Length: 175
Ligand code: S3P
Image 1 (cartoon, rainbow, N blue to C red):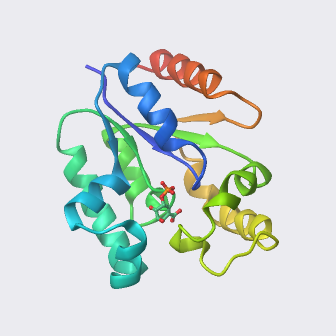
Image 2: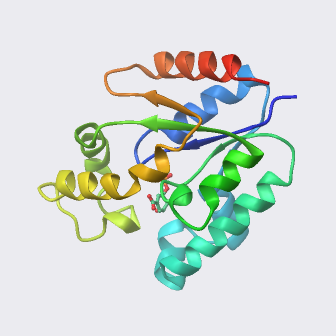
């Protein structure tokens, strides 16, 4: 049976969109880790950050990851920071396949500009400061993201192309 697939990558890299599109051809249910947390906690991610602070949010995120991994296999779109805290990356690799949707800081800045104001980690950023902020954060996170079993580059690709490439790699690496 197919194991779970964990989509990882920076905010705005397309994890939720691509995850939803992958679920059907893989014959797996789709789960969004942030949405799961929001339903479980009865609050939005920005509200959880605000109320609990980042450290407590990360602890909840880790717990949710373990709960989901104990259930049936699924395509799981994780939050952008999930692989970068605790031993989450090693854990996801041990229970499933990790797939990094890799986009350049320039592409991410374009996609995230309209999101300024909705994302707790982008608080205080402006259209001018965003590209540099993303580049710095991506540099800090690269050592986690780069541990993924599969890396798919997304710059200049259509969603359909990205999905096709993901499926090719996932099916090729199925054991
Ligand atoms: C975060 C990414 C968000 C969400 C939270 C923190 C991050 O998820 O989990 O705001 O640390 O990069 P998305 O990557 O789905 O936007």
